[in-house]
Image 1 (tube, helix red, strand yellow):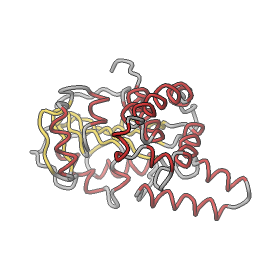
Image 2: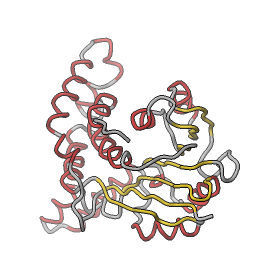
Image 3: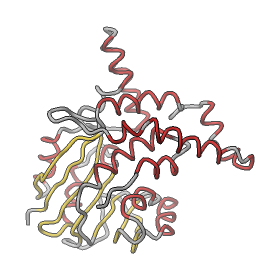
Length: 275
C-alpha cells in the first residue's frame, strides 16, 4: 500500500479523543505494510472509519458487525460492496469465500476467541490470509502508570492500575505470538508472521494522554468536545488545534518502530489457511 499519513487523518476524525487517534494511526501504519488480496472480509467493521482510512472507497468487499447503528454508517460509507449484521461466531458466508480476512482490535474484547478464529478459517480460501491486530502480551507492563508504580516499589498498585485499564477497555486477554499460533493451528492455519507495534515510548505517551484528555471518565476536555456544544462553533477550533499541534508533537511517536528484540504494546499477526 502507498505511504499515507494516518496520524493526520485519524486526529481529524478522532479529534475529540486524541489518544485513540494516536493508537489507531500507529496500528494502521503497521497494517498498511501488509498485502490484502481480494475478496476481502472485514470482521467487526464498525462505522467504517478504519476501513475508509486504510482501504478507501470501494476497498473492501464485505463487512460484518453485530451493531445495527454502526452497520448503517458502514453501509453509507461507500467502503464496502456489501455489509451484513452478524458476529464472528456465525459468519454468513460459504466456506472458502475470501482471500483475506481482516480484524482490527476486536479479538481482545471476546472472552473465548477460539470459535471466532475457527469461523474465520472456515470462510478463507486455501492459502488465504487472516490479518489481525490486538494488544500484545506486553500491553499491561508498557503502560506509563504501571511503570511509574513499579519504579516506586509498588507492584500491587501497578497490577491494580492495569486491571482498571482492562475493565475500562473491556480487554479479556493478551496472548503471546505463540499462543496465537496455537489458536490458528487449531483452526487449520499457520502463523506467517507476528510483529509488534506501538513501541514503549509511544505506549507510555498514549497512557499519559488518556489521563490528560479524560478518556473513560468525565473531564473538562470531554465537556468541551461534547456534541451538545457543537452549535457554539468552538469545536472546529479545537479540531484544528488537535490536528495541527498534536500532529506535530506526536509525529515522532507515530513514526517510531519497535526495536529488534523488543516488544510493543500492539501485535499484528498474519495467519495463512493451509488447505
